[in-house]
Amino acid sequence: MAYSGEVCGKTFTSKSKFVTHEKIHRNVRNYVCEICKKTFIQKHHLNAHHLIHTQEKPHVCVICNKAFSQKNHLTNHYRVHTKERPYSCDVCGKAFSQKNTLTKHYRIHTKERPYTCEVCGKEYTEKRNLNLHYLMHTNEKPHCCDACGSAFLRKSDLNRHYLTHTKEKPHSCEVCGKEFSHKSNLNVHYLMHTKEKPHSCEVCGKAYSQKSHLNLHYLMHTKEKPHSCEVCGKAFSQKSHLNRHYLTHTKDKC
Image (tube, rainbow, N blue to C red; front, side):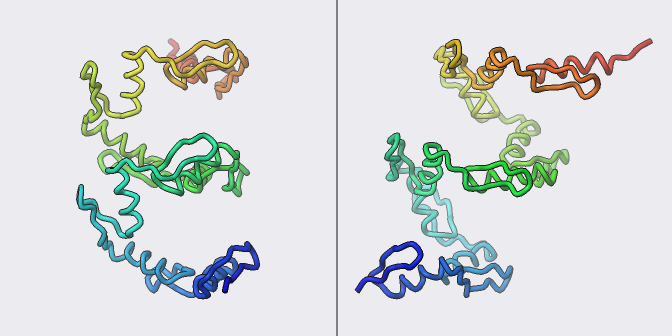
């Protein structure tokens, strides 16, 4: 006997799975965490959640010994070692190691942006990007450097900042040996050796090694000057030009 959902039409051969699925549509959350009161539809989701509070990580990678609280996280991690990418985009063929990454990728093709800011209406493809965006409205910078007290919006920005204190340069060029603190800087540096210029202007065809340089170039075509002086209102196409201009206002006069 098959059981069919009234809302989505999904069918199940097991009655128990059908009943559990229907709770998703009715948003029935009978399982409550005794510590933080967060609620869940299924008991195994609550059990997995408890590990956040206990800090338990019972699932260990036999290759590198990295530990995880949930078995599916370990399964996904193994693909780092095996290089397996079982989820492929049927539009462009790009492959991914995780199904949720493929789901996010599809939004590039569909232009879908399901997460909307309630303050300004800006839309995002991922919830985490929306959460980061909200911090711009609240002016929160939750990630603080314990060395100098500087605060950052993103943890990744804090991690990059730490390198200014440690002077570490963990990313080395295989061609000339030059070292960099950030991998992105190394990637840009490699283009000097390969002479690649992957970013091309759609208007005139001029090519650039960095996307930021292409974006600046586009302003020549659009005549946009997005950076304005708060003192006199003069506008500039590049922020560096605005910064130099500010010196004309701050210069000491005898």
